[in-house]
Length: 213
Image (cartoon, rainbow, N blue to C red; front, side, top):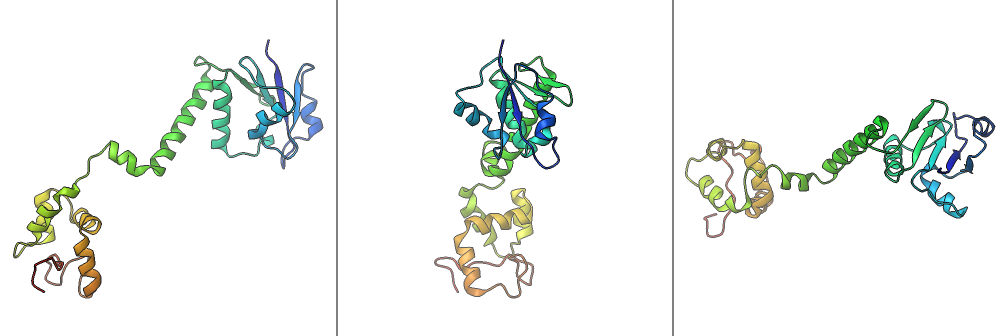
């Protein structure tokens, strides 16, 4: 039979140390955290010559004694459960057993997976886009697109429609990949233009190598 580790910590709004200890079973091994948070539990156990193993249980009086964000707590509990360590909340009468058959364990796994998915998407959005949706305009299309825009009478709206994209997508593409367009705009300024368009509604033309001023 495994060991039960009772994590005791008094925080603002939590039960007192005495109240928490009053709910312990005779065989519980007590870890009084002091200023240490729940994420330091295994470090505290190591200092005492103990370590968590499959079949052990970690218990707390209630979650108010754990001063961690909810997402961090979910990840820590999921980590414990994956190691085969159960988790108990005494005041609520909740015991989460490791294993796919335990619904609470499955719920924590789902929440942890959701967090990683959302966090990963926001942090590495470029990588996600690269693996999923294809760019609407590829960088190697730049010469062809510039040629279309240089045709007398060509407009940004017309070229965008021909390419099957929105006008804003076209402007964003040029802003990112057409260095000459950016340089020409910086040299001449943007007075009299709206979103790269001239007053006549045509796309403002950059000064190209070999083109007349």
